[in-house]
Length: 441
Image 1 (cartoon, helix red, strand yellow):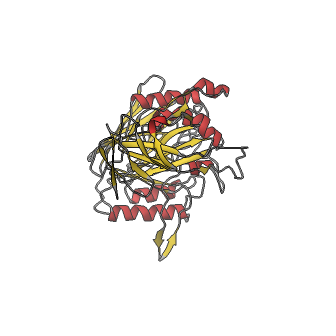
Image 2 (image 1 turned 90 degrees about the horizontal axis):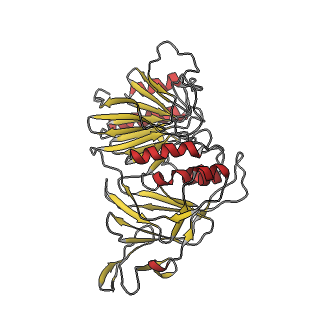
Image 3 (image 1 turned 90 degrees about the vertical axis):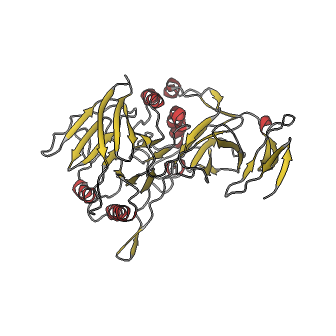
């Protein structure tokens, strides 16, 4: 590692797995650093339009992934550092082409995706970042509906907070199913801005047909005020598309589900299966578009991962399972086939709650002490909440036909949830989860 003086300041050049360069300010030359192709003056970087504004995904205690899109593949520059000071410039080399080929999705062209995973950060610490010269689309629900070309604005200075370590209080928003209806999704976005959280879990059905252009023009465009501030985990729904190469899996990749050893044989759960860790909460994610019932690889993986977590990782005091289609619901659709087998495994390991979407409403069931949520009020056309006859023994504790978010506050003793309506900012439902004793397991 070498040093040099620029404008009277000592600059340490940081070498990491990415191309990082420390920056200093010079009154004569402006902010300078070594770019991908030699010296670059930050103040002189020309304005450039980015078709997808930067968005934050997959936060950890040490960092976060930031992605954005351009319709050309020139290098980009990311300026970031601890709150109150930019101290690092990252030159992002030529990006990857967003894939288009699949059995379900046909598009004529698409953009280039930039992706940077920041690492080595401090847990539960706020950092700031920006893209010098970046012009991004202004959210416009009516314009999206009419297919108009966007207006542009400076991206400006943004910030995010890294994930906490176990034992640290934190907040979380859970919601899903905005699909292509930007004008109602806008209500939900505004509600999240009124009631911000450290992290957001999206329950799927982000768009209607899985096209990259819809992710760009509808979802990221409309949700940018939240996506640029609150890191997201994304779960795939049935509208994201399936196939060998799908834009969703490139734009919103989830942490992979590691194989488990069962009877000496590795078991790979397959794509779109994994674990989200945030503070002392662990969320096990399955893909409800594939087999999840008795004898399935997904169910065996879930059982093994729950056992490993309960016996080897007691720091995770909050255990959640999540998939898109609802396990319990009196609305328009439910995934009742594998329900008994899933419930048996969840009950065995004292899972606290199951997070589902798909039905465009809010429902809360309590079955044998497990809370089952349906939170599909992200903006798609609402579903009737009493379309299916109740089954004896099912205990629905709350329901609403409303666009909404579920906002949770987590401590080491309890998690307190408020369900907030997006049209009137009214409180629809409240409930608490208490930390369970799993020492007998």
